[in-house]
Image (cartoon, rainbow, N blue to C red; front, side, top):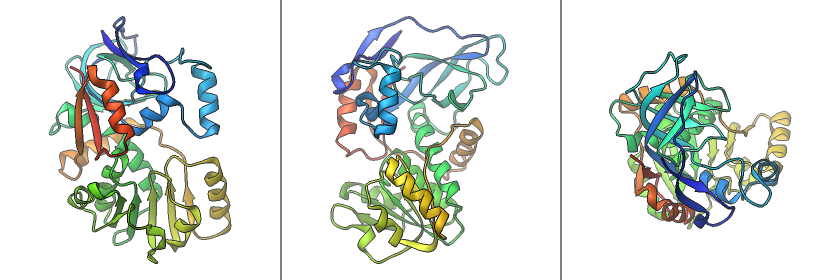
Length: 329
């Protein structure tokens, strides 16, 4: 099968299209023919290992000091069709159209992947694809959808509250805007100039162009701030919260995690850090919202598998609106 192999840390040129052996499912696994995957900012961070020290150092120790050796293929989310199942599989059958997200140690930049029928926390999540989505559209749901759902649930949003999403124009933020609207919030979306019209179309009541204005200096407060990109000052975000507000931090630094624990312990404002643990039931919940017309995905560009390097270069510009999809099958 064709797969994009991760051969070195650093530039996208280290991603090389190669022919490798097609996997075979174990007793409890399904073999998925991947129709579409995505390139996310997280994939680019993984490729370069430009991560916070407390994450980057152990990752390099695990994957290989000078070059990646224990993980060959990266990529996190996909949509495709089950081609074969192991004898112990109960939830799926050959021909099922599925979407999902892998764990850390298996990548989706390939024509096929094997996943457990009942994935654990480290194995990702798998569910039947939304009936009203193409493979391209469904592939762009799992990572952004599961991360946004995890954090916004921690925000305990009540109808009529105000929610600000910083970095709203990417994979997580675009679904986050729609989920916050589903929960009944008035949403303010923060991103660059070229993404603001798209964010209004997703239901944002207000938009802020961060290239022109710092939302933490506007003098406005919000019940929930979801900082997807973690590029705003901690003190500024605290000032922008209501007295009982919640600050949800994606991709936090160690310093911000420590400050967040102190803030949560000493006052009425709460700080939430960490990442989601992918679960099939959460994918099913997102699928139900999609089939009800509440959520849809935003796709900026599509590339074939053979142009993975170009896709990574584009994502690294920071200009993508929503998602960049890789068509595989």
